[in-house]
Image (cartoon, rainbow, N blue to C red):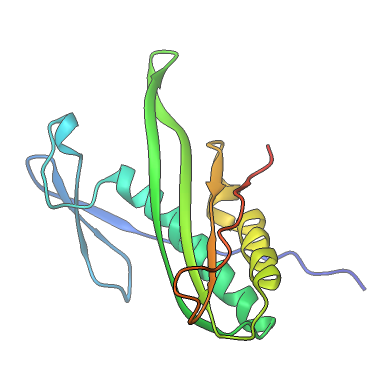
Amino acid sequence: MGLEPRSYKYETALRWTEEHKGVLSSSGFPDVGVACPPEWGGHRDFWTPEHLLVAAVEVCIMTTFLSIADKRRIKLVSYSSKATGDAQLANKQFRFSSISVFPRIILCRGDSVSEAQDAIEKAHKTCMVSNSLSTPVFVYPEIIIEGENGKGAKLAPAPQAE
């Protein structure tokens, strides 16, 4: 008995409003104002395609980690992260050369740092968004046990294999 192939469709709609601005929408979700970044003649205070791409990777890694942590019964106090997308001119085209995500995971006392490390590595390897990109994605987790006053394990980076 083989597994049935699964496929999903994610739909969005975009409407130009004025200048270099638009509104991004999807059924059942709040609209998002978007624009190109100021360095390309765009506007401040709007989500840009570049920010949305970096955010999509960051959100995917978090939600994948949370799903894995839930299945493994890892008890979290908090999860937060920052992400950076480095873009540069290469072969006469601007493109992202890398995206780095810096999760800060605080675990309940008595939970396993190594289990959380394994879960974030698995999330990194299985994140659908980053797996869909040719840009390398790196994850640099910091995992701390609650109440250790920041003396938790700062773990080595887990770069994505190419």
